[in-house]
Amino acid sequence: MNTPNVWITGASSGIGAALVREYANRGAQVFLTGRKPEALDKVRVESGFPQRCHSVPADVTDSRALGRAIEHIEQTFGAIDVAVLNAGTYEQSGVDDFSSAAMRKLFEINVFAVAETIELLLPGWRKRRSGSFVIVGSVAGDFGLPYAATYSAGKAALRRLSESLYPELKRDGISLHLVSPGFVDTPLTAKNDFPMPFMVSTERAAYEICRGVDKNKFEIRFPVRMSIAMRVLAALPYPLQFSLAKRMLK
Ligand SMILES: NC(=O)c1ccc[n+]([C@@H]2O[C@H](COP(=O)([O-])OP(=O)(O)OC[C@H]3O[C@@H](n4cnc5c(N)ncnc54)[C@H](OP(=O)(O)O)[C@@H]3O)[C@@H](O)[C@H]2O)c1
Image (cartoon, helix red, strand yellow):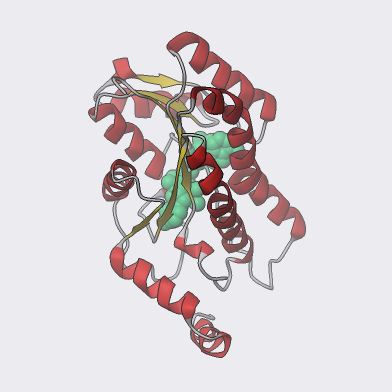
């Protein structure tokens, strides 16, 4: 791949914006999607490589807008080589504030928009036998975290979706990488009022993601200590898991 075309959703802040800088710095043509054109333009200009970055505003929950964004990129610049499906949201959802409507809204962004993008890109990628999906999940998908019922459920759905699609995609020449970050210092975590152990910067997150893609890893997990802690928690028998989860209650 000479100059790859990298499309990043959720590029206006946090991990997505850091990925824009990382990929642009590596010489890629980078396409930035989010709902706010001004915020995308700011990231584009501040990337240091504005000539290689292109704003393609869209709401990922609007399937027609998604389709138009893909069409615009591919007709103007050629096929998308890497799609980083990173747009996401988080709302606290414990027993007190549990709402199926809020869960549906979160799933529209965190789960169904990912599925829709895969569906839109697949026909072209299968024909070309190339393309790379980078799906941003979370270690929160390892285990149902207290006060994060809908978020954990959405990220667990992305994990199963990724595991399930991976072998067939590989057979068809398409790669898929599941990114499972621990806490990253972004606007999404800024609203949390609980301790966030082993938190990393967005630059570190972007570096880890690109390194994992380069190594062709299926799952890209970081930081190591948070990743291990969540793996161990998820592997414990339920009585032990729930006694640890009880300690996380306010
Ligand atoms: N921060 C963490 O600790 C952490 C840990 C694990 C996983 N993650 C995951 O990492 C991803 C990025 O999160 P972040 O922490 O970087 O949060 P962030 O700074 O809040 O970024 C979220 C991005 O998603 C975009 N977005 C949200 N809804 C959208 C929609 N309907 N259409 C288009 N874009 C939309 C936002 O752009 P606009 O609002 O401008 O549209 C923004 O660019 C998410 O999937 C999150 O679940 C984060």
